[in-house]
Length: 274
Image (tube, rainbow, N blue to C red):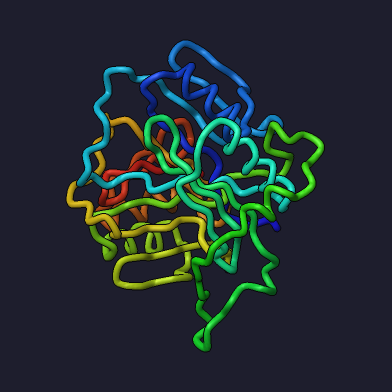
């Protein structure tokens, strides 16, 4: 299913580029598309989904600091999810696996402790919707043995064509200001809202961005830490000029760079929009 709004690439700061690149190739299933001193671009086909930037002296993210909860790579079908499970089981370990009724998801951490999700959506007609038209979410046990027994795809060592970054999930200090940025500025709609979590999306998707306060982060993100550097998002219904003008009205830090809008939310998390 095609959505108007898409997460294009996520950039991470890592301690050891070669080590992280191998992890994302051998465990996650991306391919290196380009590399240079201190940086590698990985993706599927000719589409970059992840940029790794090496910074061996960067500090680890502080325990009370806002930042990345997980990057969620969305695969097109269950065989591709089964391939991902077998890759992880051979070389790494899961931190969780869930049937959310909207999707089936595997969870793990990379070598710098960044959270990752690999998931496939269930058919939209099966998504639970409450009486107010809001999406219902569940967290049930995913049968890993049944998934592992799924017939492998044609290329079980790599993500197949059609894989993308389905969403990013962030840890924030406060949700009210997050609402102003992601709904008020980016124009995404609320799909799930509770005291400690907010999911927002375009085109009635379950979420393009997840935001939570589950771990009580108290400080904005340190842009010098290992972990999230930026997220690039495509917002075809909003021009760069419109975004910059609206950001100025809302008092949100923003500027133009290379024809794109560079934006920072209240948690000092950087977004690139075009």
